[in-house]
Length: 192
Image (cartoon, rainbow, N blue to C red; front, side, top):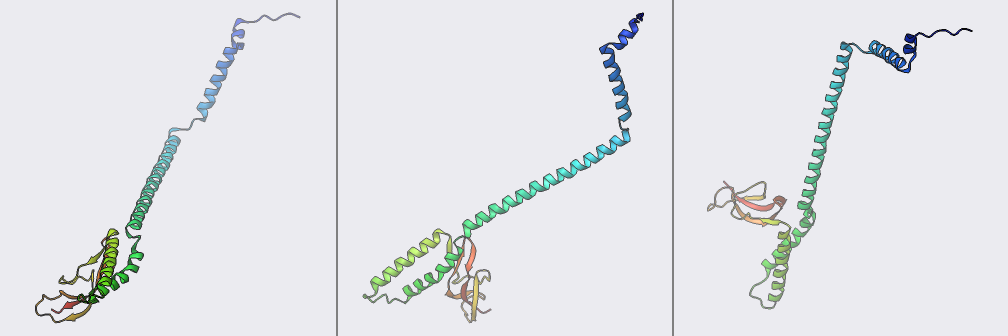
């Protein structure tokens, strides 16, 4: 058999570098055929931009909700600290009233009950001091203008020497806890 003579140009075309270049050129031609047109790219960009804006809006809303929940939780904790003793204080007010009435009803001249009176006064003082530590304070009503937010009118009375709508007598003291009304003062108010 006779050997065919090889053409040097054929050798270059069959070399691995030439094959790689040919494959790259074919791939580039195929990629160019697969590339979307400008209108398709613009639509995809618009879709992605819209989606990104929606996700950004969701993120901002989620962050705002989280901050609101945190703020509410902090307020709830603060209120729990401030008003956690409210039920206890309400239960102590009748005891306080009873001790005050006992002190008022003791005969100051009677030597036999003087020791008991002093003991009740000391107990009353300790109770008032303990309640004051937790910001339970009495509402000063005697001689003050009637305030429906702090006072509960029991009756209207004629009091010619006082201004109209002035508290002339306190039937039962009122109390506040950190500025919040625990119990209104029951009062008698002068007529106008």
